Each structure stands twice: as structure tokens, then as C-alpha cells.
Image (cartoon, rainbow, N blue to C red; front, side, top):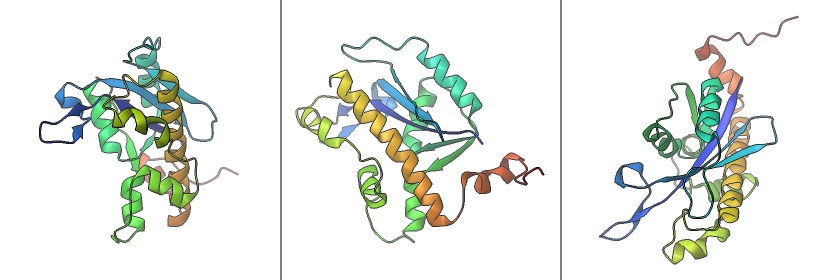
Length: 193
């Protein structure tokens, strides 16, 4: 089974009534996409729009090829990431696994934090590198203006944490990606003797 974890970083706009929005529908831009295949070590991290870093060559083609090959994509609050990639012209119609939704189910609707940083701490995975970007965000900067090396380190940590959280959640559910999705994908789960 081909399981792809991905995460996007974007610009964000300040709302007139306070707060920010990072949704693609308000003139924001896609800064980067990080993605990784389950059981592989490499995290691909591509620049799309950054103040000092040029766009990664072939980034869109490579990511779309990965989406085409994926049976399941994994993300934290994946509706956000899916809205971004769709708005940017990528297509994906396969299965999804959302670590935030899975944690809500595991919590049995009790109120506990569902954010990536909280889940990374709970499951003792790679930690979200929010300390890297908080000083920039506090001064009103977006990922477009944060030094590329910091954006990349932050984004890679998010991808790794999301994948590791998903695997630990599956353990808590007592299942695997194959058990959940093979029947829906029409794949036989029986081992061939």
C-alpha cells in the first residue's frame, strides 16, 4: 500500500477584525509542500513561493506524480492541505487519513487538545518545531518571509510528526492502513503462500 504523508506551509493574511487566515481563497500563496512515503526515510521538501528561495525545479510535477501513485494520503487537519493543493491545480481523489479526526475518535469526544504540537507530545514523536517560527509570526511575518532553512526544518518536522502520530493512532485502534483501506481499494489482504 502506498501511503503518502504531506503538509503545506502558506502565507497568511491579517483579518480586519483580528486574527489571520491562511486559506487559499483570500490571495494567500503556497510557500512549500513537504511529503514522505511510509517506510522510507527521505522527506521531499519543495519551495513554491518564498522571498529568497527560488521555486524547486519540477516540484509540481513530482508532487502530482506522488499523488497519482498514492493509495492513501495522511495529514493533520488534512482538509486544509487538500483545499490548498486543489486550489493550486493538483488532483487527488483517493483515500485520506486525518490525524486530527482520528484523535477526536480516540478521545471519545472528550475535550483534549487536537493540534499537531499536542499530539506529538502525547505520542512522544518528532516534536513540532514551533519555537523556530513563533518569533517571526509574532512580528507579523509569514512563511514567505521566514528564512528558508527555518521553513524547511519546521515543515520536515511537521511531516515526520504527522506520520509518526498516524502510526501510533493506528496501534491504539488496533489496526493498520492495510486493514482499513485494502477492502475499499479492492486489494486482497491475504498473503500469498
